[in-house]
Length: 437
Ligand SMILES: Nc1ncnc2c1ncn2[C@@H]1O[C@H](COP(=O)(O)OP(=O)(O)O)[C@@H](O)[C@H]1O
Ligand SMILES: [Mg+2]
Image (tube, rainbow, N blue to C red; front, side, top):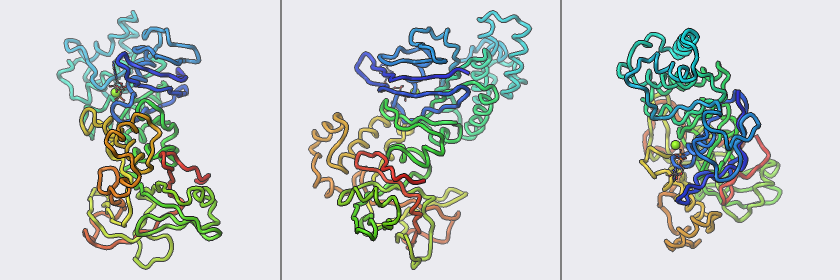
């Protein structure tokens, strides 16, 4: 049960790429930590530095509290499984799993027992005599895991091990992997770009963007109280609705969140209104997940938004309605990752920076600012008069409905808003902490 601590760990590659930027992260003994982020954000680089396959440019990697920067990979007692794992094709499954034990000169008898134990834990006990080519993809991935854990490492590192498998198998193996590592009590760092995978498997999730750690917490914490707009948009399905809102304070009465055609009102006696009131006359981002929205009759009093259904999406167990409510959305969906093809994640990130800048007229990121200036877009007015771009567009508020509802696009729909479930973000995309929830 190795503990891992990263102290201000930075990795700059020879070509100047800052892959990891001053990361601080503690992983407890026996913990299942998931590193989550889009393609290119530096997840593999972090993992490779923990494994000793890559040297940090600055900072310290501590294993069990001891400085490990200069330890060779084999002295770190770590096991690693990659997306593109390679089994020895000419060896049987049993010999593949036993291989690390043979290298470690474990005697044949205990070796056989340990292989049998691991194989049965992984549900591949009956295929030990086969060659890898005679296995399914899922079985092969299990063999790769077996080979990694048979040496009983103190630390198990997995880099997108399920990405090449089909979705059914992925779901099955998710449960198996987290079950197995917990049973063995082995500390695990698991890398993925898949937010659903992260939320289902992790004890804690660490979310990265462009080499920078954005947020760390239990799935409930990062989902329920995301530290940044980026994290809010990255976690959950459907994505959190992120609306541009102008703040107007009506002293002793309420704080109005003007969403365009409609407003929401935070009562003055709601403690959050005191915090949000600091943004009087400014624009902020209001986030509301689909679970904060309930369809109601159109004349229902209270915190209600009126809309018209733009389109519907049927998911079997539920249908999603996307409502036009006359508001402006801050769109961060380009951040997703590999699904968009190589480099898509990076491009999306830069665009996200521009979103924030367009939205605010400034940017905390020099590189993004210069990109934007080069395009002549650094103008507050052009932001306001520039609707319909990818990153700022009419809001389509995602609302959950029962499966296959008797409504269609164009249909009016009113939704009641759970005001206590709203999220607030400032112009930089940082959470406005209202001391609530
Ligand atoms: N050996 C390398 N030399 C230069 N740049 C690299 C090298 N390895 C990775 N990178 C860059 O570092 C960044 C982070 O890469 P990586 O850690 O592989 O991201 P992830 O695993 O999150 O997809 C990317 O921009 C990638 O192109
Ligand atoms: Mg990677």
